[in-house]
Image 1 (cartoon, rainbow, N blue to C red):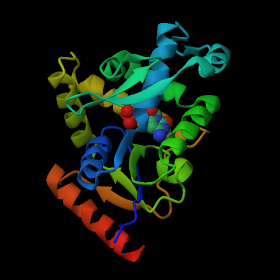
Image 2 (image 1 turned 60 degrees about the vertical axis):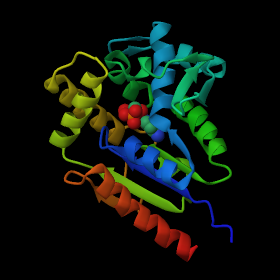
Image 3 (image 1 turned 90 degrees about the horizontal axis):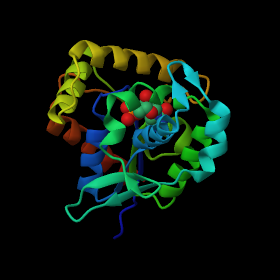
Image 4 (image 1 turned 45 degrees about the vertical axis):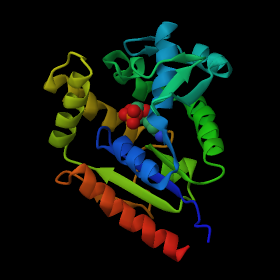
Length: 231
Ligand code: DC
């Protein structure tokens, strides 16, 4: 018997382990994994390279006019690693750098940017069998997702996790800088006019502050099994 391929939406605050969970879940279920935050970061990188972001000043008209010339793709290499490409160039590492992280929430506030990326995300999920993580996946991108999770963890735990992730990649940053960036991004993401970060009414809350990666994965896999059984 063919089991139904679910659409799984994972939303939550910055650095609460959404992408790690989504990636592991997709790999276990043999589903597609999409990190939607990487798409917002890629548009931000394009804007930074064109000098359309300087401090608080953002050249919105230039950005909107250029949206049709931005092509974003995910590709998998021979080792099975997935990377994001901006107009044919692998920019997976560059989009994780501090200059992108500190501007991305501002770019993610622009309605036209969101409209373009949401359409692309919906296309990627057309056939189901997808795990996508972000801020508006269960509310806007896939409002009819089979399973919605809203992930959170304490700010201390999130700061520590992001700090480790960045320093392991050789990025120089202090704990204080990481924390400030997370607090600022959470504030902007939760208070913006366009698709703010909110827990969908039908989303299951997952606080993973004291959970290991494996415990969290098992917890979610049990939910998936019960969804598959009931669908
Ligand atoms: O998940 P992340 O930290 O890589 O996301 C980067 C930024 O992109 C985050 O500050 C908010 C924004 N974002 C969004 O607005 N909507 C999404 N679906 C995903 C990310």
